[in-house]
Amino acid sequence: MEIKIVRGNETQIYNVELENVTLLSVLNHIKTKIDPTLTYSHGCRSGVCGSCAVRINGREQLMCEYKPNDGDVIEPIRNSRVIRDLVVDTSAVEHFNRVASAWSEGSSKEKVSEEEASRIETQSDCILCTSCYSACPVYVVNPDFIGPFALTRVWRYVNDVREENSNAKIASIQTNGIWDCTLCGECVTVCPQNIAPKQDITMLRMKSAMMGYQDPNGAIAFGGGLDFGTPMF
Image (tube, rainbow, N blue to C red; front, side, top):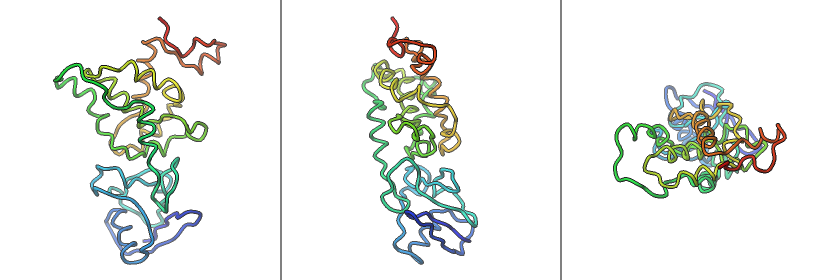
C-alpha cells in the first residue's frame, strides 16, 4: 500500500504492507520501521481526544478511526500554522473559545431534568479536533471568524437552562461570528461526533433576532444604517 504524506513543500511516498489497520497504526509503523523523523500527533487512540485530526484526500478525518487505502494523500489540517509535518498549532481553539466566551459563567440552578440535559447533549460531545475549523471556507476571506466549533459551544451554553450569562454570549458572536457563516455545511460533514454546527449557528441567528440583533451584511445590502446589528429595544 502506498501512502503519500505532505511534509512542508514536499510530498513523501511510503510503501507499507499492512492491511485492515487504522492510519494511525500505519504512521506508527512508518515512524518505528521506516522514517523516525516523521512527526504527527495522537493521544487516546479511540476517537475521543481529537488530537490526531488530519486531511485525507482533501477531507478531515481522525487518524485513529480511518482505515487507509492505496494512494491516500495525508496532509495537515488547514487554517493553522504547521509546526512540522502533520503537527499544527492548535492555539486557535483557545483563542476563539475565549472570544466567544464559550464556557459556563455561572449556574442559576443545581439540577436539570433529563429533557433539559438532552438539549445540550450533542454539543457537549465536541472534542475540539478542529476538523470543522479546517474545513470552513470562511477563513480564506476572514481569518478572524470565530468559527463553527466555538459557535456550536456557544449554542450549548446559551441553550443550557443553568447558564446565567446567555445575553453576553449572544452579544459576543455578532462580529466575526454567526452572520459571517455561509451556512455551506462543510463543518457538518467532517465532524466525527456528528454535531451540526450549521444548525447550531442557524439557531443562534434566530436567538439573536429575538433579542433584536440583525444581520449587518443584509442591512448594508438594503441601505441600513449604523443601528443595524445592534439590539432594538
